[in-house]
Amino acid sequence: MEDVEAPAIGADRIQSGLSTAALLLTLVSEGYDLQAANFAAPSLLKALAITKAQAGPLLSASLLGVLIGAAVIGPLGDRLGRKRIIVMGCLSYGLLSLLAAGATSLSGLTALRFLIGLGLGGVLPNALALASELARRGGEAAAAGMIGIGITLGGVVAGVAAAALIPHFGWQSVFIVGGVLPLLIVLLLQWILPESPAFLANLSDRTPNDDVNRLRPRGLAILFQRGAAGRTLAIWLTFASILMCVYLLSGWIPLLLNQSGFSARAAALIGAAYQAGGVLGGVLASLMLARLGWHVVALFAAMACATMAMLLWGPTASPIALTVGIAAAGFCVTGAQNAVNGAGSASYSPEIRSSGLGWALGVGRLGSVAGPLVGSLAVLLGMTEPRHLFALPLIPLVAAALAAFWLGRRFSFQEPIAVDAGELHPPPQRVAAT
Image (tube, rainbow, N blue to C red; front, top):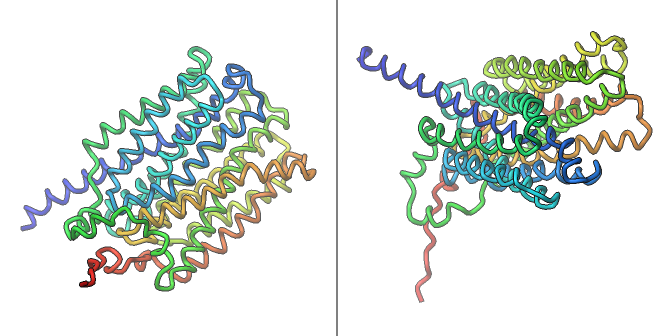
């Protein structure tokens, strides 16, 4: 028996590894497309003869689309299958990115970026949920956290591609790559990625009545049933607070470097240090999740608070000190982001994981939209010294640390938010006799 089972276990591990790699590439593609417009913006301003103020809606359009897509399309993975939603999302935003490369007006490009965001929003929660489900027992949170690093890597790829392509082929080349890449990944997903085991199990148990009603939204109600309201709200607060800090820093660090007199080359290197720190922090946080759970999120948020305080009040006049501080900020803040992705995924049972993550990421995107706006408001209120901007993340980071600490004390990944059997398979409606 052992001789027969050993090859099967090995084959399962190989399949799981290939699936995880495919999901990681999927999120690299997503991270690329999220950042594509940001890197193409300087060339777009000249090509379309628009001002920076007019470009604001364009840069925010995809974030708004992600917000809506995560909350509305993401939960459909529990009903229609996670692989199906991931494939359809990649296919849609890939084709739309190719259309965006041919856009000739600001309004048309903005509309396309919003639609691209809808597809991106549907992919992320289902990719995280499926990675958790395919992981070995006890490694669900680490698996989701690890593939979440793909978002950061995708931003790095977008920056490198923009630097190499735009001078020779124009801003359109960034969107062409952003369209071709997910279409190639669709082929890979169709070949390698299995469907969600939880979805397949539910599918085999469905009645005709279930099939009629399977598109009916149910995720939000489930997340508040049986005393789960407090946990759900704490998860939402943690997601929103950390994503606010991520987008606040990513939007304002270039301004900080510019106002501090760094050359373009030096600014690029320091920006790379921020991203590199983020990748290292994300890996370490993901590896710690299985043992420490939500306390990892609290730890990295607390370390991020200390880093912000150092950048705000510490000796950062020298380029070396500033580079180290910004790399540490990337390590802590991005580490917290990956940790919250993994912890959030493991906090829901497989049957409702896409719904739970979809709503958490959707609410979290409110923070991502608010982040750059908070920076603008601070400047209007007189916080013009660049280092003062590091005071802004302190409050949301403290809120995230406290909420995550509470979650770690009250709950474990062994008792995730689950669903009643009656919710999955409601009894057929009886028609009264007349």
